Image (tube, rainbow, N blue to C red; front, side):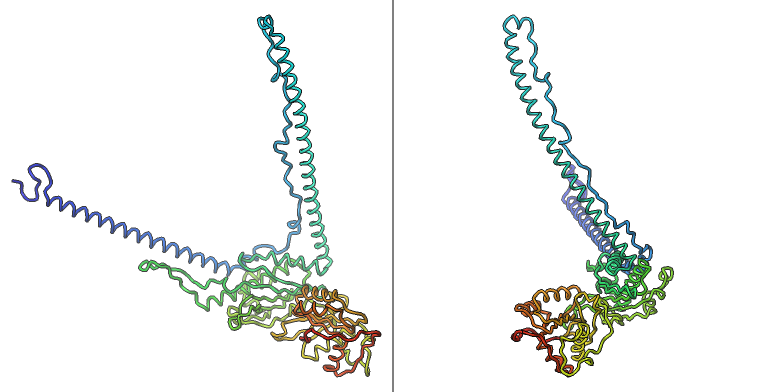
Length: 530
């Protein structure tokens, strides 16, 4: 009899052995399952950790990039290479494709029948051969004629293709020539210090400032050739370019990724430094690219939504007015602290730029677009019951300006030779007024037509004015007031209303002597906002 634990005499495993083997296999399967699960968790933790490390490294690279905007910009020259902007006529050579190959001519040996043998000639083969020869000759002549037509068609297509290609070459050469002529004209204009040319040149300079890709590239600038000053209004990068997260870490016990927020003080410091770097780099590039510039006014703004009102705003965060001699050289700029440097340049900087705390710009960009003359007291020139039609156009413009000044607005009269359709500029520093308004003053004895409304609208668009006012001693044609109302930001003041405003705000009785003036029409326009 077999002992317990041993196999049976027949060599078969006992029940106990089978049970132990099954238990061993189950234990092995469980061990493998636990080991596999443990390995999966290890790999998952490793992947999670690596992902968190990659995201953290990306944040660190971003912060490093924001801290090196000025340094990286100083590594290259800001002087524009005019030749790099030149255009060449780049038209690929003509590719005729299949048209380049002439149609193959038929070869007679492909058509000619074989000569009959001696035996064939005895049994009438010569006649058959002649019939075959005639048929072959006919096919050969037909194919030759067809080939001649196909070749003629091919050559017509070749001529047309060459003509079209020549036209493309001529058009490309003309476009390149026109572009280069315009570029040469700008270059000559820069040398002659022409305003439009210099503004185009400096716009290219600002557009070439090496800023990170996701930074806005919007700006306005105006150049004054008399003072050799350029005033720039540039959109700064928004706050969210600074990562609010400092790092990421993976928590294996919870299988989740958890961000570590960056301290608010650090975020604010990075953004202050960034704003300072952008301002300094723009100033450096403009001074370097145009040696004739004497000074630069720079206002840095940012688009944001006011959390209290929900209104879109464009607050100014940094403002500088820098003369060339006071601006540091490149070697010094590499060693400065950006915030300290702009304060040394007497910049006005928001105390809390990250919180979008606005400042009042040193130079008003909107006002810098105009050429003003010294204010004249036109009211003092008015005698008892004067006739406005006897005033000079210049004195009339000053008088109109003084009406708005008497109503609490600031006013300036433009130079007549450079007014660009603007006789005066008025401003009231209140949110309701909405910035600058331009004024056109027309001492007319005839009707003012709708075309003058369009001219005012064009001047408002060009100068980006918030409001437009058209003042005349005469009257407006039908349709003018409707057109002004449709525009929505325009005020019309005719002769009778002008007389009333002068009496009300300047205390003067005036008259407008226009023979055959039509009866005043009812007004439907708005009251003058300034």
